[in-house]
Image (cartoon, rainbow, N blue to C red; front, side, top):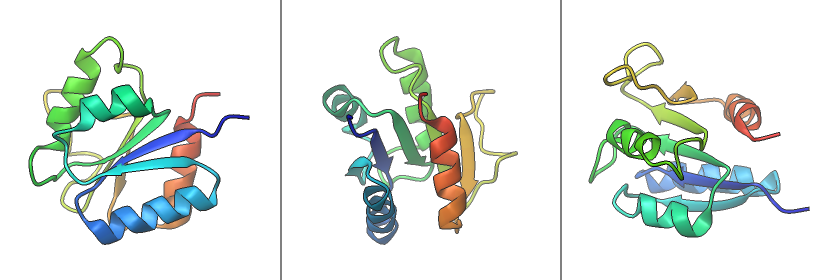
Length: 122
């Protein structure tokens, strides 16, 4: 059985490492980026089943990256879980575009896993 792939885009190395370790312990194949610049190329090569993406990145805004994802026919249907310490589920959308789900930082590991499992293609 093929492992499900999760792409994590998070600029805080400690958070990225923790999420990666948790997901790997659940038998996911995980790839991490700490910038949004390489996202589309990385998605093309890694082909994730779910993307976990921070809104505030050093080189881009996660909401802008979400728009880019949704406007591309090949990536439009990839489920996205947005995470943020600054925003909450009611105020992070930009132009009416929302991710599949949202999780505020700091978050509980169980809540993170519940949301990821809910987003995985069946």
